[in-house]
Image (cartoon, rainbow, N blue to C red; front, side, top):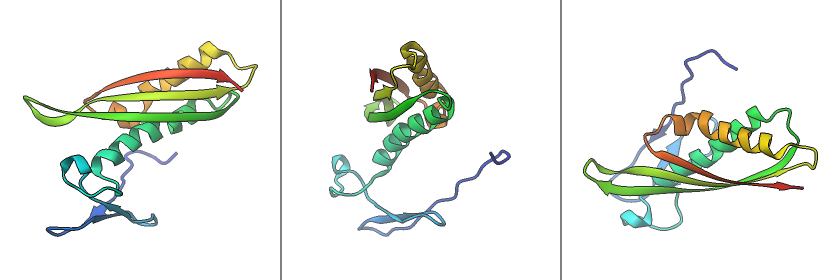
Length: 142
């Protein structure tokens, strides 16, 4: 791992209408827009879907790092970000994560569940957010 601090550089550019390209050196450009709930067109990533996707993705990548010695074959994560309007304005208040982990017959189910909980706890994305994160984990033997 590289020494800290790490920096991640992203750029976006846009005008009064149309999609906004989000770019980072060496990566494919993402065409983004406001989500349909805010009047944007369907079919594009938005800041809201990218953040919710980052929560799901980070859980899997953190689990990978923590489960290096565990026998597992698949982790499917579905995440719902809940955006609400309150006294402090509009913000994400909760991320509901449904995870389905497939483990080998020899892997301890309690250890697998605890490793998933630790992945939720140590995910740097959710640790950086001011929103509740709920994990509903299903462990299956494959």
